[in-house]
Image (tube, rainbow, N blue to C red; front, side):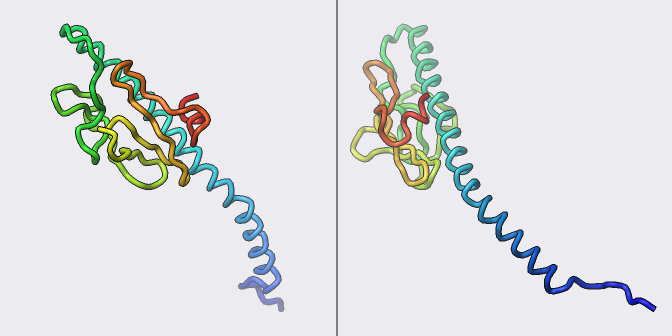
Length: 149
């Protein structure tokens, strides 16, 4: 009479552990790259939204007979890109500032005209020119090329 097999042998378990280890060493670097690419995609969307909001705000002011660009993009350093705080609005809810990957922050002492966007520890600085309405980063610095292509 044969007994039925109810458990795995030690060799089978070792093979499974080795295969899982190989898969993990191949997959983990790809997941790290995926997070970086997701932060870049999010940053690109943010930049496009901010630029559109600047143009939209300018067009609203032109209809009212005001021929100037918004003087600054944020009224405080916590919720960014909401407008100047004097009745000129950009994004209704703004973007929360932070210090991690995929976060925006205000550069100190720039009257909220300079911002950084961080991807995987690398900050990219964006400048807002209130004379021309241009929101851009310096090409070739940080992740600028990936964020504004």
